Picture 1 (tube, one colour):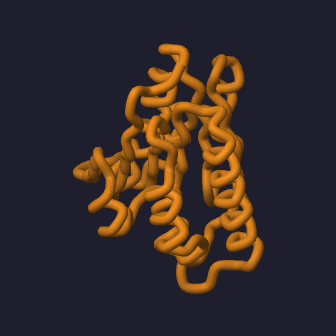
Picture 2 (picture 1 turned 120 degrees about the vertical axis):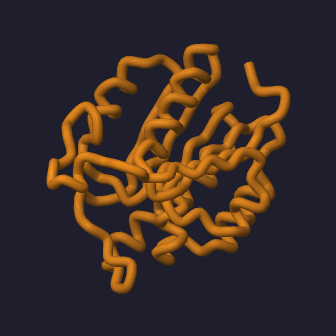
Length: 174
């Protein structure tokens, strides 16, 4: 099974829900029999979605990051190396053509932090297989990515409990 035509999505903005939206799209696709692969950039924590996805057929997730804050101004070499390794893995996965949908979670942030070169991402997007559905998430989606994407959604933060000092909650925020 494959999509008749694959589109490019980007979920961006300051609001909550970018990864959650991509996961929902992936779950929908997996439920319809499509094969989904998600690469999480700049993430190394055992998020709750990893536990859920392990039991879902046709949906795989891998992480390329640490459970550490990454400095935009001074990223550590390990963060650059992990992002580069994840991007190479993304290129390989896409080239092999085993998956119908590929989600590059937090790729927009990795590009904004200069862990991955914008030209490399644009090249990957412009050369994706015709039937591959490609999902890009993260704040700071570059205007060039927005320009070539078929579906662009901006999550706008209006109100969130952390504004009142409430910490992230397991099962909701991670």
